Image (cartoon, rainbow, N blue to C red; front, side, top):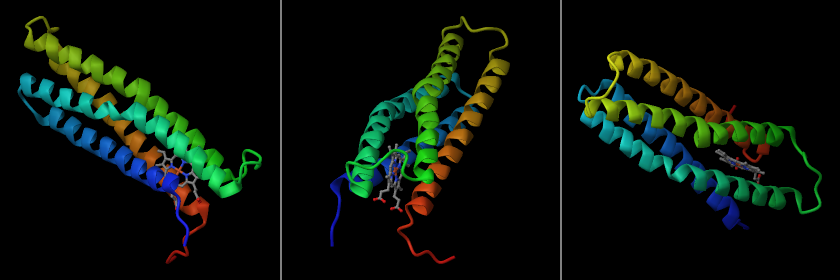
Amino acid sequence: MSWSFNFFVHIVLFGLTTSVVVASFILHRQIITEKSWEKKLLLSGLIRIFSRFVPFNAVLLLVTGFGNMMNRYGTNAQWPSEEWLSIKVVLFVILAANGLYLAPHLGLKRNMLIKSVIEGSGPADADQQIVKQNFSITALFIVQMILLLSILFLSVYGSGKHPGMF
Ligand code: HEM
């Protein structure tokens, strides 16, 4: 029996990435239902703590992903060797770009709106503005979940390691 520490870390990082997305989504749903602006701010702060994992996850998934490629094809293999992997890498780049740029940008904007309301300097239509912002963030979460599930499907289906039941 052989095993790869690199592959083990890759799978752990997959779990960590999924946990960050799911935990942040649950907190985001709480922000939507929560009436108190102070509690909204607290929940938004918690999401920002989770989001600190994102750069590490993205870099380490990429590094261990390349490690998997070396284990799978050897060091002299030509890129791209398999279609599922090329598609997976493109989806990964979109997922990472959304997680590293778009998500923090939308989160910060909402955080500033909540803070301004608490400090009494918020806009008159703050309630409508936060509904719009929440809608954009929900849409982004749905996109990220679809990307993550597609990457998982491609990894399991494409790598062709599992006999399967169907
Ligand atoms: C969010 C990003 C990623 C997730 C969730 C993910 C998830 C996974 C999972 C669950 C497997 C195991 C599949 C199986 O054993 O059936 C896997 C394998 C693999 N991943 Fe990733 N991965 C990600 C990013 C990457 C990247 C960026 C690369 C390449 C640069 C990569 C390259 C590979 C390769 C080559 C394998 C197959 C390993 C083998 O068959 O020995 N992954 N990935």
